[in-house]
Length: 127
Image 1 (spheres, rainbow, N blue to C red):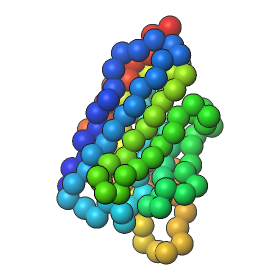
Image 2: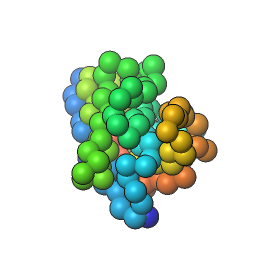
Image 3: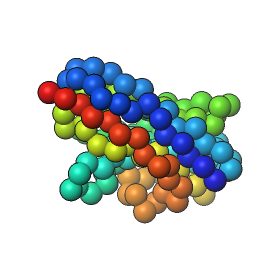
């Protein structure tokens, strides 16, 4: 099982970045995919998540309208397009996967619901 996040970097306020998370070793289409982030001295927090059919993604209020999560089930990859970046977005960003256990499911925001994690990619936004 592998989740490989990439695309982070150092940008200025107002810039954009696109994170990618390529996966292998599990049935990608059977998992909710999410992005979390963790800033220094803070707890890991939910950013965005998307179900297998890409309908009704969920976003944290702090990123709603600026970030867009998407997935390509053919490429086993999930993306996070981040626009209008702010210094408060500075963090290590992690992709994560949670198994879908029923036909009807609810996207969860709690990190403990996700059992597969990538290694993280650093995003730094300078003011």
